[in-house]
Image (cartoon, rainbow, N blue to C red):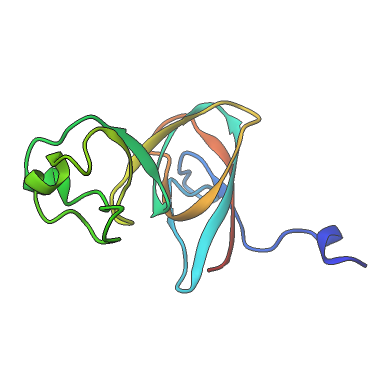
Length: 135
């Protein structure tokens, strides 16, 4: 049997918590794992953290806000607001640091791929599945 025909491993059921603990409202990947796929069965927004999450940013308010994004010229978080606002940068898509959360709306039937460290349904009506794999 080809590996692609095997049932997936490390599947997590996402949704509102229940008294039996059958659905997880917030999950974190185990060490050396990431969630690589999220399937939505009931539409709502989720909150994710992880690697390679980009967001459009027009400007930042202060040094703390700038430090939430990675400088594409250095590969490190921005040191301060002035560097973010200089002529080499400015408005555009910037990668968030891996601990910074982002809210993502999802519709039923949608699948999102990435390298997520945490997934939080935040008490919404979201229901779905997350699949983990080794980094």
